Amino acid sequence: MTFKQDFLWGGATAANQLEGAFDVAGKGLSVADAMPGGKSRMQILGSDTFDWSIDADKYMYPNHKGIDHYHRFKEDIALFAEMGFKCYRFSIAWSRIFPMGDETKANEAGLAFYEQVIDECLKYDIEPVITISHYEMPLNLAKAYGGWKNREIVGFYENFAKAVLTRFHTKVKYWMTFNEINSAIALPALSQGMVATTGGDQQQNIFQAWHHQFVASSLAVKIGHELNPDLQIGCMIIYATTYSYDSNPVNQVATMLQNQAFNYFCADVQVRGEYPAYTQKLFKEKGVSQLAIEDGDLALLKAYTVDYVGFSYYMSAVQNVTDKDADTVDGNILGGVKNPFLEASDWGWQIDPTGLRIALNDLHGRYQVPLFIVENGLGAYDKVEADGTINDDYRIDYLAKHIQAMSDAVEDGVELMGYTPWGCIDLVSASTGEMSKRYGFIYVDLDDNIEGTGNRSKKKSFEWYKKVIATKGEDLTND
Ligand code: BG6
Image (cartoon, rainbow, N blue to C red; front, side, top):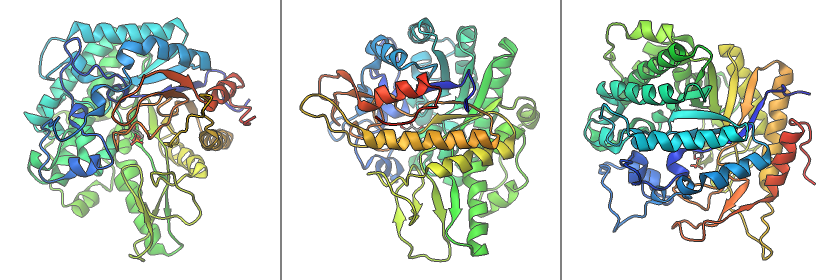
């Protein structure tokens, strides 16, 4: 067997993308609730005028309803159990626990909801894997405080982390402090609650906000380990294996710099507990001046590093600074130069299973801590046949090749804890707010306007993944 006996096979979701019930049981608005649906979502968030206003006459807000997992979680978790999930990665909506973000007392109804979700997982021996904050900070913290660039958010997050860790540490062993913390470099709205109208220099804001998030992450590790030293608390980054376009050393250097700026910077701090040696050079490149760092911050970062690296992997990227006219593609947060050796998804994300083997070796070699692939998958249009079947062979092909790459990396010596493919049940896309960009093993009958029955049905990949888990990743065939 390549994968270890206790390998965590499962699936991943995020509260804001599937729960719906955006104003139920005391929940406050989150930044995700203010994000319009549709392919222009990122342009709207990135515009000079976006100020977090919700304008229901102009836009549709798909996250408000999601797939109504809030009311249907038992049915959904039963389907995960039927596939044989050993774990389920989900996030806690911060605004269910602290509706405005700045309260001192947690909302019991919010905690009670997640307690039910956790208990439902445990009923089936499914290990909950919790992302404390996944693109869903309370809207009030973005609007009234200016998001993570404001030091006060550290204390609010500390309250939030303390509330959920204290309540659930006896039931939940695996945690992550922030989803894709490094994604802020491209669009700080999602993970840092900052847009152009927040004011100030955007690059300066991003790095200052990161410092606050690093401190907050260390505080969560401290709280968690003091409650129970066995808790495993990880960071979570978005990783795109990055190739030089050619053997021109100039492009090789550009690739090295891009790796530092995008793939490594946050994890370097969170795993090693200190700012990396290239920090000043990076600041200079980005036009960032010295950050406001308080006494005790650096000691805290050093003392409370993460236990593992969780990461998402969807695609790879190419660096080419010598040919400005090279063809480009879209991508997950970062687009870039087209790789002539790779196919792309319908959304322009370049599919590269071999890049995952490289990613695993690179991260393990660099950090020497266990790795956890907490997102991977193919966003695709699915067709429901007249008899109700959904033959998603393209998804099976994508996942099988990525699991094979994982297997190769484990043979290379990489320590891999688990694998939770993204959107194990169809949910609202983060970058485009669409339902039609589907990742799931389970189909949800809803369109981009969140209209439909909401009924769940099994795609062909459902039975396939069930077999993969049952054979511990040994049988990847599609028959
Ligand atoms: C990751 C995010 O970047 O990619 C998820 O953590 C997101 O929230 C996933 O859903 C897939 O991206 P998208 O835009 O296809 O939903």
